[in-house]
Image 1 (tube, helix red, strand yellow):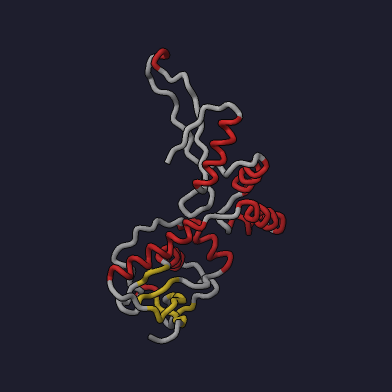
Image 2 (cartoon, helix red, strand yellow):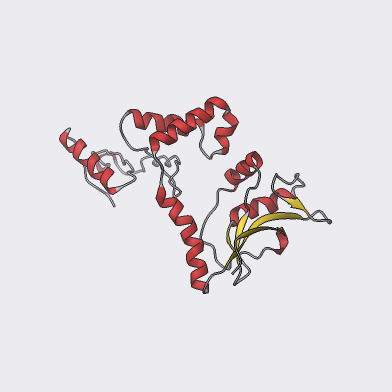
Length: 218
């Protein structure tokens, strides 16, 4: 198998994986591409000839091309105007299961990594001070930064996270239903999301010491 290399391939000529369970923040991906260009659009499996990484980025590029936008930096155009995306070549799966395992692992290992919240807050604050537009292109908003800084100040984990280890606001709880007043709950609680089991155990111990009635959820 040759060394890894990058080849610009016409968007319509890049077959996608047969199955892909990963959802995509297409609006966020587009903001990133518009701000930073398209560094790498995806990775191709030489055995199957199909994409294994980059489905969201290619979908965004296709939408931009269909709208008549100018190609972002890193994307070239063929003689007929078709966009050509930079694709990593040179890797081959050993089987269909191997290809799907790599597709999932490429996403899952990033999700499980999480963030060092204090360092993340410092970086986001510096970016926001330099250019508010750059902050939006990171996938975090000014409100996310405020919530993260507040959680750090209170020595608590962020109260909202998404599957990628970033932050996402939790949906508001529904309004009380039509049950008679006497049947409504008289005990109220909150849910705090922890990044690790150790963080959960430490928080439980601290709240128990303060006299709160708490229990762990998996």
